[in-house]
Length: 295
Image (cartoon, rainbow, N blue to C red; front, side, top):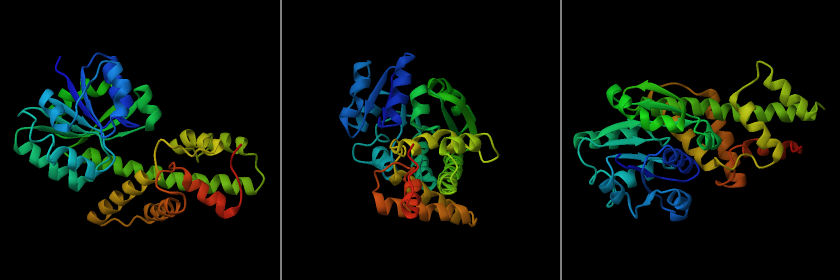
């Protein structure tokens, strides 16, 4: 079995790579922070000092990186992947990427005979830990079918979103709904607290009602615990909301709710810092009103 390259083994990429190792896929891994890969090396992964070394040793490379600039650097930089992958190799980008940046890199890859998929994921770090991610995959259907055995150990569901780039578009649309819901759940909980409804009861009633959502199920516990889900940072939320706005402008769709969410996330990042957890948008409202949702 040929080894798979995995570049970017941080909060999301690390458990994804671990799940591949645990079902027997040999891995060559790289990250800007070598310490991020220590657990994977202990499980049998091979460390590579640069992206080009990953490409030299593999014929399938997965990237799971924090932003479009990082993807561009890894794929097109001086020690980048594209100059070293052999023709007929495969690049699978799991980053929540800019459709514009991804398409530009993908076309360069295709022009030298490399097969490409965009395969961003949802279901958060705990989904990655359990091998229960949802993949939105764009690209040629034949390439998608060939890659499914690699994706399956990391996945609960794998959707074929359509042609190249459609995975990224789908992920940004679903993230917009996530961020709007994150803002709304804060308003609901703070309003309920101010009105004297016991928070634990309110949480259960929300989950049993038309107001239920993935955010209600997944994120209310992090609000009550007071850590506001540090596994996904405000910086990443703000980056995604910028990409969502670019997408909306391209397709001439006014995002009244999405733009309001972007304003709130920008305010939370300005107040608390870019490394705070995504649900600090709720902390923002707690501080404005003068109420605590910790129980």
